[in-house]
Image (cartoon, rainbow, N blue to C red; front, side):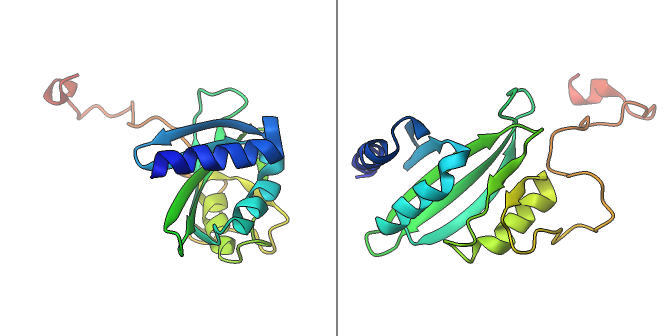
Length: 165
């Protein structure tokens, strides 16, 4: 059923948005669509009109090696009456790092976007109250970005042979 949903959604959205739909694939049992950031609001409105009225989740991702597309947002939508789900992805550069807010379509996106800003530093344009929600206001970095080494290289009390290195 899900593979036909991917085909159906891809055809509908490509008919309306064409080249703004960058990729579509089936990952496990989820249809996944990658879309252009500047069209995310229009695409979300189209999906909302098609029955995807529940924003299940929204989170950020950081791919430091993908130049020009280092930061991204993943959206999970659910059409509860028909029990259909879809995942949307959109990417932006770390220099631009702004994506339009979905709070006008999904009011529940408010806190999810604040959490994503707090941990990844993604600015949601038009958000009514974009500020840190879990971390201290004094933090000048975003902890979920992969910008720091995994281990402290200055430690001398550690024997790497014990860890297979």
